[in-house]
Image (tube, rainbow, N blue to C red; front, side, top):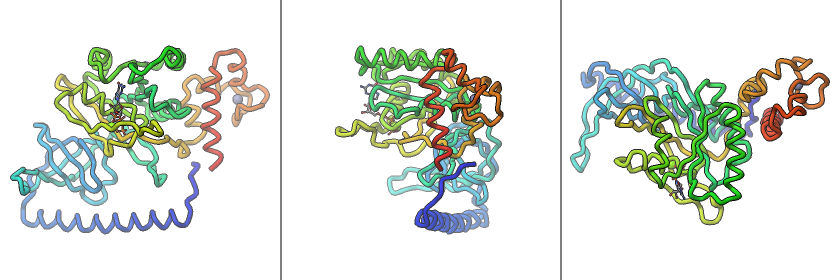
Length: 346
Ligand SMILES: Nc1nc2c(ncn2[C@@H]2O[C@H](COP(=O)(O)OP(=O)(O)OP(=O)(O)O)[C@@H](O)[C@H]2O)c(=O)[nH]1
Ligand SMILES: [Mg+2]
Ligand SMILES: [Zn+2]
């Protein structure tokens, strides 16, 4: 497995952070055992993790009541969408007489799926669990980084979650960009991926999306500023998600959403909003996983003469032949090569 080398300073920082984490965990355990000693925790209940804040999670019970929960040590990292068993604790009242329910998460139930990505410290962290669909949101503005779509598709294919490409902000399309996105989305539709075109400001444009979201758990992912939270605000008018304008100078998003959060649809189905990303590194993947992530290359690669074919200049390369014959698109192949280069450069 390729792993980025850490500088001494980075290693020191990570050590320090881990030390602090361990200290916090010990303190938390003390609070929990105090409560337990005082007989303050209720009986075990199943819950759903709605959001994650540092060392605590927000858990909902089957009545949709929410609890701020501590985690038992050794639970590993919990993530939005996790199913857990927790024990309700004391209710706390703040200065404005608002009551906060608290609790302790005892167990995490097995995940049916999990989407992970590297955090800024190059640690692979899950973003959301138990999801049925990954909705990759793109927009004419901010413009997508080259091969971001392919990177997400590689991740989705490898965790066996259905990806959908959603073009938002169609109101900003010009004749030139319309042609560009038609070609781009057409390439993915040709490969069997589903795509949708919407404008978060126009509710009528969202009917196909609503139909798709119904009855399953989906997660919105993509670059900062493409309108993930804005879409949820239009889909669920009772929610008031924070939305941030793009930077005037760079036309990039400002990382408005900082934590993944799950929302329910009244008619069934859940949607997780996730913080936008800058880039989606795949350096933690093996070459085989990247090849697997390109669905049109996956099978063809098996016909290359050499098992370790790099599909560059090798004789008997089935992928280069398919490229010559126009069976594989140039854009996708270039993207594949670029992703492979990032694996070997590290
Ligand atoms: N023109 C236009 N602007 C939109 C549309 N949807 C969202 N925006 C604008 O795009 C900007 C970013 O929207 P957000 O919803 O905050 O984007 P986000 O993807 O949630 O961003 P992060 O939380 O940073 O990841 C805001 O200024 C929105 O008003 C749309 O359909 N058309
Ligand atoms: Mg957002
Ligand atoms: Zn080959």
